[in-house]
Amino acid sequence: MKDVVSASKGEGLAGKTGLSGVPEGIPIYPLPTSTIIQVDNQNQMMIAALKRNLDTGGLDLVSELKGPYLRLSEFISEYDFPDYKYGEGQEYTQQFHDMIKPIEGYPDLTSDKNKE
Image 1 (cartoon, rainbow, N blue to C red):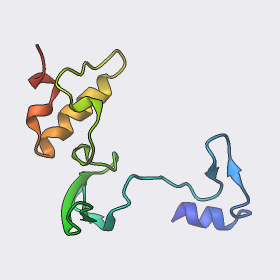
Image 2: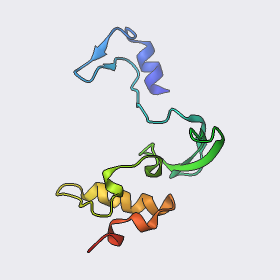
Image 3: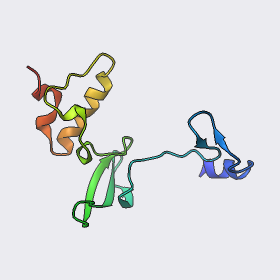
Image 4: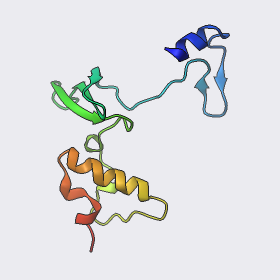
C-alpha cells in the first residue's frame, strides 16, 4: 500500500523507465502465472494457488514458494537433463533447484542424483 500511496502523489503513468520498458509509477513484478485464478498465503514460506490446467482444462490447487513465482515442474529446461552440468557462478541456481525439485515431487532430478 505504501507504493500505491506514494505513486498517487506523483504524475501517474507518464511513460516507461530505462531500457527495460517498465512502466513508471507503482513497482510491478511480472510473473509467469497466466493460469492462476486465485492466490492466498499458505504459510510464511508458501502461497497456495488455484490454477487452470492447460492440458485438461481442470483446476489444480498447488503450493509454490514465495519468491520464485514459478514451479520448475511446469516447464522443461536444460536443467532437467541428466547430463547438465552447472557452471561457475551457478551455485545459487543449483542450490535452489536441489531444494525445490523434491518439494515438487522430483527428488530424482537433484544434482546429487546426477553426479557421475
